[in-house]
Amino acid sequence: MKLALAVIVASATLACSSGAPFEGLAPAVDRGGPKVVFDLAANPLPQIPFPNDVATTPDPNSPTGLRFNAAIGAAQAQVAQLTSEIDDSSLRAPLNGIIQLRLAEPGEVLGAGGRVLLLIDPSDQYMNLYLPASVVGRLTQGDDARVVLDALPEHPLPAKVAFVAAKSQFTPKEVETRDERQKLVFRVKLRLTEPAAVPQAKPGMPGAGYVRTSPVDWPANLK
Image 1: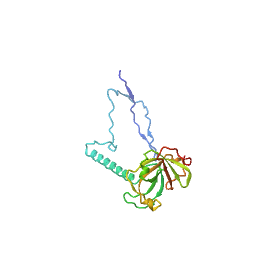
Image 2 (image 1 turned 45 degrees about the vertical axis):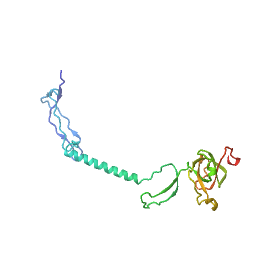
Image 3 (image 1 turned 60 degrees about the horizontal axis):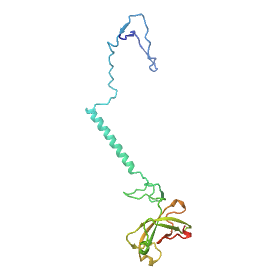
Image 4 (image 1 turned 180 degrees about the vertical axis):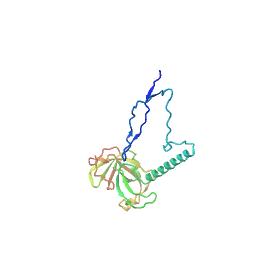
């Protein structure tokens, strides 16, 4: 059995008030004329074509599609270029540290590789010692050490031997006496194991480093 749909055909006009927005269609009125019944299953309604001004995606192989894809590629290339320029103009810290010095002022023009800030890592604090070969020969990397700062003599800071130079050198000029500067020594690096335990300790403070050349206990003032 086919479903029959009754459609009332009658004359009607579009209702639209003057100066008012379009409201819609006037209702159809049954005036007693003949009624026509359409069987939509046997006679489907024709498809209404889209207007020419409706935007559709062109065929990518057509001339319009090729121009369309070329414009998209050019826009994407411009976005990539601008993104790269923004990244090159941005400063990103390689670690969670503290800015100790600002080497360039806002608005200053820097060349390639110019330095802007001096960033320090508060979790990586160390002291360099310069020791003779007779002492360095008894040290190994990882040995316990102590650092005592001049400003904090009552707080010995625990440390480890992090580096022992394999080649001797003349004592740097920072060493006080002339006799010491004329000797060949080895650089030994002591790294603090708990730098956050004494927040008063800051980079640049002078002090003294202590190492052990035999397995003995630390004295009471260095424990």
